[in-house]
Length: 91
Image (cartoon, rainbow, N blue to C red):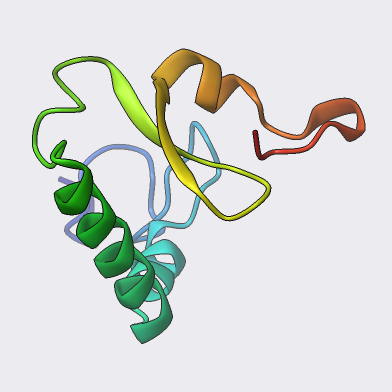
C-alpha cells in the first residue's frame, strides 16, 4: 500500500488510471433518484414480458425502439448500435 493507504500507482481515490474514468462521479449518477426510477421501470417491463432473470443467460437485452417500445434483442447487436456516424442509438 502507498503512503495514503491506496494500493498501486493510482493515487486518486475513485478513479481508474488505465481508463481515466472517475467512478465516484458514476456512483453519484447511478444512485440518483432519476436513474433508480429508470431501472425500476425497466425491471417492471422485464417482469411483464416474463424474461426477468432469464435474458442474460440467453444473451439478450431489452432494446429500446424509436417508438418507446422495448423488445428482446441480441446483446451484441443492441450494444453495437452506439450512435456513431449519425446513426440512431434506437432500433
